[in-house]
Image (cartoon, rainbow, N blue to C red; front, side, top):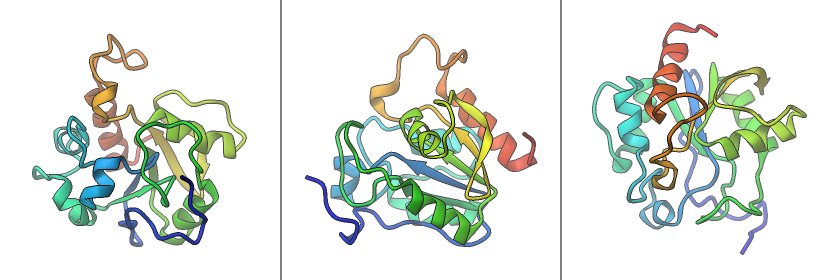
Length: 181
């Protein structure tokens, strides 16, 4: 059931000025909404990928989500008012994301799924993105699209030409750290 734009957020944003990167998901999963933490579902590799890629310097779990700002990272979703178990028919709020990016001015926005990246690219009038660095800005921030850390997105033979999702997450860490494009 869809809720209006004035409905409370399922998960509050973890944003502040001066972030290196805002990681933006599609919508909170049902388990994340129930637990009140980002990427809390069983089988979701978000927290291990964050650490293995070098975006954070210690192992974190979903219960540590409020700490990501210590590493210059923010968290949000394109859908803030409902949890989901699929990516179909969701009320994506790209203008809301753009306003948050303009307000907090991170250097990068990294979408944690091709679906989230595609929703933003449609809004921006851009073609459907592949994984990696994009050639367009969102709210003044550089854009990167990651493969989803969801347990449903594992075991593929290839992730846009890479053997693992981790390779893309490490590339994000390098561009965020080094500012390269």
